[in-house]
Length: 371
Image (tube, rainbow, N blue to C red; front, top):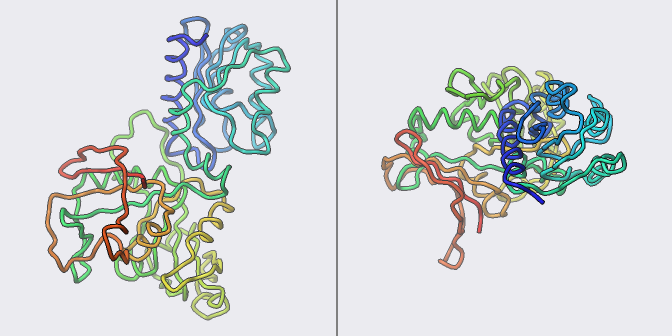
């Protein structure tokens, strides 16, 4: 029987796992608590790929006190050797008597093996405690392991009248400093950030995580890397001097016919990776793009793009979450819209449900999902 104490222990493990939200890429965020009755004897979370997993850190803190105790883990302990030894074996060797696992490993090639290893060693296993809360730790990892595609967040900053820029293209700044801090934290949570070449040419963004602009991140582990910057650029028009190319870690998706051209070769000479994908009349084949990003191990993709690319993601129902920052201003009827959507009647309207609504400085932030 699951007790309130068990729920509290798993809630603590989930809280610990969130500390790795900016740093575990491409690994999932995982937390672990080791307890003897009501007393926590060890706890840990996964901080960075290649370093100790949550279970190993918790066991190290617990030492001999782990024997006969209970482990609460947000994700099924791994059963295979990767960059670190299997955590299921570490729990067995430590003499843990009972393991609560909130969620199974979604990777179909290993799912359930860690739990089975524990059971075969005589350890009691309980699955599913606070599974919904634990699943929200790793929506991208869960989705990529089951569909091959990353979790897609589309970020927009708009005025009260739904405009993202003036007709001239002027857009800085619609939202205030607190919203911009929030976006920096959103970027830090992402494995990759996607934009279109039109945005690169018009705004020359860097699309980097700037730690000094993130503000206070509490007990979270410090970000240790920049997300992959991704550009949808059919004809390889991205200028060599573009800010987004600085520091490398950039992937350009262009038309296959553009790969042998001089502009593409110039980008390749800078060390930029280029991949040819299909393009449609309305732009890049975003489904193929997502498949390619999944193959690169991208779990969470942030789309910061103009109205054309944003509209394509929305119209093809490929947005998992829409993050809308709405500023208390009007930009006028000639301003640029958030998305180009060829809708002709009310029956065509795109409906969303609100997952979260909160004030961020002077602006309102909405997190929405497609109905």
